[in-house]
Length: 517
Image 1 (cartoon, rainbow, N blue to C red):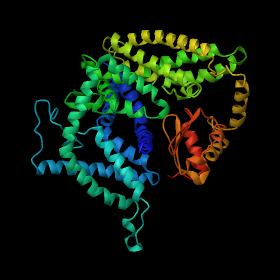
Image 2 (cartoon, rainbow, N blue to C red; image 1 turned 90 degrees about the vertical axis):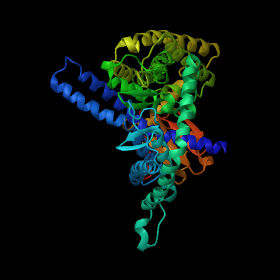
Image 3 (spheres, helix red, strand yellow; image 1 turned 135 degrees about the horizontal axis):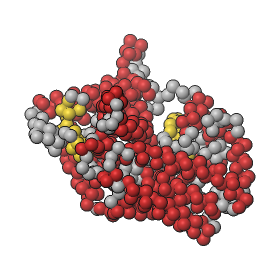
Image 4 (cartoon, rainbow, N blue to C red; image 1 turned 90 degrees about the horizontal axis):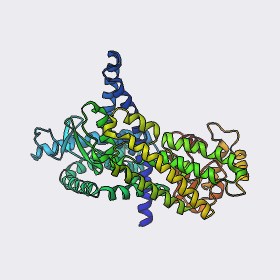
């Protein structure tokens, strides 16, 4: 049972990260749009900025459908286009069914001075329905993806063949969606109360809650389950709810994006921001840890370590992709990872205590752009950077001390480091975009061969593969390819790649003839 739950959590994390990857772009474009609307801008620039903001607001206000379609397609092992279509249609018919049921039973709430805020209902794509926000997309996406995988290959006799395959999935989803629309009308109000209570508990926990949230969010990265912690707080009601100009916004990240769009009239940053500052450790932790690795490397390896570490520090600090750096020491010393997680928790707690209300979900680029449209009097971004410089020094000093004290074999401290660097260069020479077909072949062989591989997907930095028989997986073969580490959870194998993971996935799927799946 435990193994099954772990696999389900891994699958959800893998699938849910797909739509989230697009939200970073939304945030950047929204910030640019707000800047374009400043008073001193030419009228044509203000007009274009208004259009851009309207476009991004539309995405922000309809994240539920984005998650529904994204999750359905991500869960689908084949026929992903069909799965996405069924996911979209299921979402739309849920809205229609739920609205019809509420109307027929006299359950429609009446709008007050603040609209439907606080009534437990909301307007979604023109339908007044129970207010599930992003949770509706998450639930429907998971159910549709599961049913799609179960029935998308079912075939009927020739005369009825049109009703088989993906059409059968849709046929099944019609009654399933109807039942959900009715049942959730009565169940979800209670769930909403539970979410509100949990959110209030985290809020009342103050700095202690920030510490636990920050620690877990960093410590769980090796398992991939950190997505299950930060995503609900950033994109659902667990992270808080705010009425912004008559529109209900849920989740720490969503609330900040809404505040960006209303920067001119904003009086304060909502307290939910405490769940959207974990980019702090990506920026300053990467710098401190990277410098510590270089400092501790043996003199003869120092140049090679700089060549290896500095690019990962740059990617971590600027883009917020830290896994290439994380996995350069995680497997070498879990104790060092524990220390890293504790320093991260202390850092984010200090930010909260000292009054910083700076949004930092990803890296330095996203942090500067998004916070630039809101007055520093509100974000107190100067506190963010002052604490950042101090904590980067703490990361550097603590890591340097521990590495030397316990003689931890971080990059450049092992005499075989030079040989490993040479071997890596030899294996990966001749590839494009930092990745070769030879590496892809090694990964396929290490996963037990073509016949043992069921699915190939990716998140920000990891190649995520489901295999039929995990006993056939050979980590030694996989590690001959360009990678940062291998994690096995049940039948799910994660290969840590880094920023080139998309190229890796494409190369592997090409060799497996999975390009259209």
